[in-house]
Length: 69
Image (cartoon, rainbow, N blue to C red):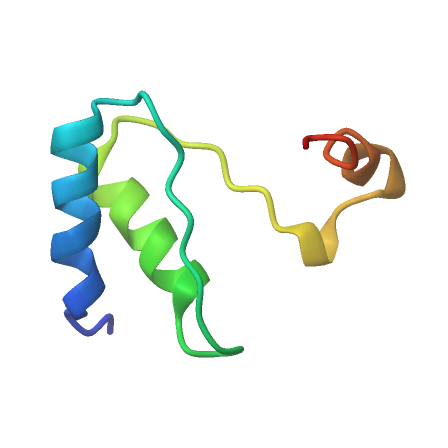
């Protein structure tokens, strides 16, 4: 069961206003549901999505993201 969260409406607004031109950053304390809401949003609002869980990826894949400044 996924609860409706206040952030969902903000994410929907971002999707409609930015139209894929910017990334969405979700910040917050640990274990409050950031990943859950991001995945639920992707499932409902897009035909397909890619989920990258940095806690469970190989060192090689992690290295792809080291120099993204």
